[in-house]
Length: 80
Image (cartoon, rainbow, N blue to C red; front, top):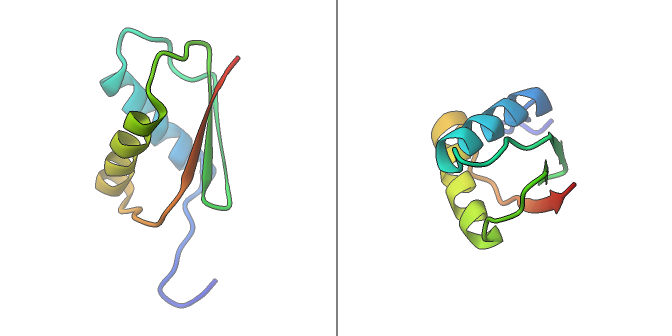
């Protein structure tokens, strides 16, 4: 790992994504799973009513606020 960089454990990201979902989409079921690898967050959901761009923006702000994570990442919403 380079000096000044850090990685975030997948379990922590999963927890924060679930918290984000509860706050932003309380009427929907929480994601069934969340996977992280190489600046990619994959969210598996039973419902897919969200606009991907809106989720990216809101989740980015949420990750920054709760984890201090501000690097670029990619998100995929996959309906189960």
